[in-house]
Image 1 (spheres, rainbow, N blue to C red):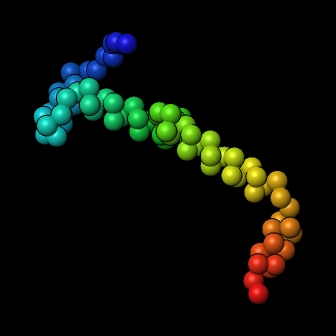
Image 2 (cartoon, rainbow, N blue to C red):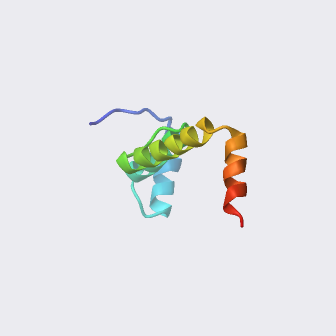
Length: 80
């Protein structure tokens, strides 16, 4: 899908130069910038990222549902 984004002349010149310096394209810079923005706000970028985030949140929920006293006891029971 194509979308238009407007830049002022100075910003566009700097982005084009950055792309040249990195031997990349403006599209690659935009992809990197938007991926960083989504990551910053906790939005999964792809399926792998979404599954990783889901697994982490389910682990936190399962740990949080066990009372802390029960967690301490289970730790103490393991040491012999």
